Structure formats: structure tokens, C-alpha cells
Length: 419
Ligand SMILES: [Zn+2]
Image (cartoon, rainbow, N blue to C red; front, side):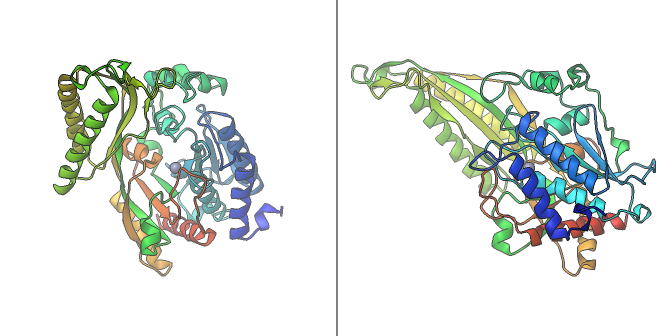
């Protein structure tokens, strides 16, 4: 027996998080760039530990990592346990990696008794985070043949290079992606199960260590909307002759904030964010009327129709502000990420497994996006287990207890045992 396979579950978890976190440290936090160096280092480290655990590893044509029990040669569609290995810049170590670690550990628990579980695969996906190329779920969309050629032209956050270029550097055949060649069709998998840290504050507030997820919010985005007005001397141009881009964007966003409030009162699920909003550092000055503002716009909801309705309101209000303030709004490519419902039968299975382990399982919706949404929308039954996590996510201060994580691993292991 080698060292890793004799570790306790807690020590093994610490080993996985410590090794991958250490190799991708980028203070503060970790950086595992989608289809980039940090993500590849994480992939290699995970594959090395999986091999030590006695799991068989394979990399697919789109460079995702698959792990299985070496003795499991059954042809039946497997249950896939997985998550992603990329992170946002200076992100936390558990976002994504927790799900991959859980998948490996659940799989390893069936070593020598593969017949007790359905055919299982652990999957480490690339490119889930939208922080690098402005679009989420790149790896799982490619896997299911839905990424499409347009995404290959998406520019890296630093303005240099494209997603297609980064993929080609890894040896991925981008023509296959452009052609929408899936590596996984709906009938190829019995289910996709993903463990993930919660990225909001609800579970900590409620005292729930693990939960099952009911659905995943989709989003509709523009990474860069441009509002063009007219620059001028701040002292010399009177109000009635101004075309102030900052005031125009401020008015647009306050109008949308009011629509948002009303739609929430009507019971709709909706959030709106303009996370980037800036005048140009090259030309802005205290004494210059801002002639241009660039801002991002993101709308999220569990309901596609609600997002569409709110988006129509955005475009309508843009036209109104253009008229009243003499500015022009120019929108870049709209990026849509569909919402998804988790599979009720798998939620019930997780709840039954939790009861067998001694406690009931609460359910919550996911405000953040996850690869499970892509699998669900591709016709593969999908479900998620959330693990309590303090201090939010997409920042270096994520705080997941290993004891909570191991409860999640136990739950996954038990849920697949009874299929
Ligand atoms: Zn994640």
C-alpha cells in the first residue's frame, strides 16, 4: 500500500487541497486560469494523486481529466461525479476543487467493490469560470458539443489572446469545437452529480452543513456596453448643452434598479449587477465632462422569461436615456447562460441517502452558476450537493470545514450506492 491510500479521509482531503492549493498559489489566494497554466498544474496534481489512489486516469480530446476504478469495465452509462479545476484570479482554493476532490474520494471508496456501485466516473473539468474569457461553462459546453465557434474568438481578460488560441496551445482541436462535436451525448451518462461549496451566506446562517440544490440561476450578460456622450470643459459647458455619459449611465442604472424592485415585489427571481463601470483612464480628468463610460451588465434568474423581460426593459430605458441626454449606447455581444432545474429523482435519492446516514437534507437554489446546469440542459439528469462555506466565494477567504466536506463525500458515496 502506498502512502496516499492509507491516509484517513480527513488527511486525504487536506492532502488534495494542500497540494493543489500550494501549486497554484497566487497571493492573495489561488489563480487557476481557464485553459491556462494554473489550471493545467491543478489537473496534473489531481491526476498524480488519483494514480496514487489506484484510480485509472484519462484525458479527453478537450483536455478534461476522467478517473475511474481500473476494474470497472462495464459499458452501461456511468454516473459522473465532477466539478471544475479553474478558479477566478486570486480566488479561493475550494471553489471547484472541492467537487473534484469529493469525486475522487467517493470513487476511491469503491475500490475493490465496483459491483456495489453503478459504473462511476470522476471528472475534472476545465474552464468553468467566466472571469478569464467573459463566458462560463466553457469546458462542459465543449464536452456536450454546445460551445460553438463564436466563443473561440472571446478575448482574454487582459485583452491579449483568445480562448481559441489558449485551447490550441493545449493541443485541443478547435475545429472539432467549432463543428460542435460532442464528446458526451445525453445517453452516454446516467447522471451528473456535483459537490460544490455554497457561494452565499444561507447555509452558515441556517446551520446546515450540506444541502441538495433545487435549481441553478442562468444569466444574461454584456461584458462591455459603451455609453458615448460628448467630452467638454467642466466649467464652460452649461447643463442644457451637456452630453454627460456618467450621468446617463447613472440614470439608466437607477431606472433599472427601480424596475428590479418592482419585479421582486411581483415575486420574480431576479438579480442585476453592473460590476464594471468606468470612464477611460486615458482621457478622464476632474475638469472634463465624461464623454464615454464602459460598463458591464449582468442579469440572473432561475427563469429565462424573467431575464428576457428585464433585458427588454434595459433596451427600452437605454432608448429613453439616449433621447433625453443626447448619448448613444452600444452593446457588445450578448452572452446567454441558461438556467437549469436539478433532477427531482436525484434530489429525492440524495435526501433518502442523507436519512440513511442519520439526518434529513434541506434543499436550496443556487444563485451562482455551475457546470451541472450544462449537463441538465443537455438532457443528462443532474444534481448538486452544497457544502457550507463562510465568507462567500470568488475571493481568497472561502472557509469550508473539512468535517462538512466529508459529510458531503459520505452523502455522494451513499447516494450512488443505491442506484
Ligand atoms: Zn465553482
